[in-house]
Length: 330
Image (cartoon, rainbow, N blue to C red; front, side, top):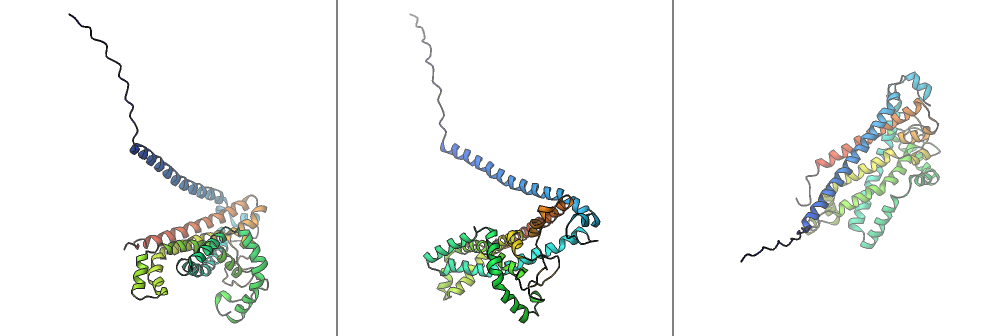
């Protein structure tokens, strides 16, 4: 008796379910490409800005002094372009460094008070107010500096000129208008104060509690604990905060433009009018009326400011990298 084999039943394909591990690996690859693309975009943007500045600044950098004198307002005769930019670079650096010297100690004091001295509720309110100061537009600082601070500081600058005039920064005749680099430096210090304070505060709060408790257990006072544990731990962070503030001070425009009486001199007399000028304020002042080679000259001064800012940030990164070995786990 023969039997006929029945055809085999069709077997449904088995669908493989994706495991959670596959999903996580997919998300990891996607995030890696997004992060890589973001980093490449930053570098490409920086390179594009640098290329634009170099290309547009090159005609002014290679032009003869006679051509520049015919096209650029307030250009001194028979001087090279670099001699023309020099006083602007000097004024920019002087104003920013003075602002940094004023703001950094005050910012560190405020940050230490918020992080280690103030009660919790008061610390929260002060931290909120400091962050709010960073959001105020620069034109508001300029209006405040011009209408309120400038007249109030005139007696102070006069007293410094009369009694501390032997010091180079306070030498010369103090201006009766107050529109001098010293006033600009105070306004810039107020503007960068929230940035330095906010970053320093977060760095001080990261100090390991074991370090603080160990110092107090050994009989240290609150200040000795701060000096031996908190400040060494946060030193690199404070440097980074100061460099962030310096970057804003270097590029500030409106506040300087509204307050300073400009000049084109290599002068340390910060109490006298018509002595210094900054690059950003000079560009903002002359750009609306510039044309032709004068535009290229202004872009060339912007290139100088770009190089200064880049050099400052590279120096700050080098300083921080030298101190990165210190860690709270050590």
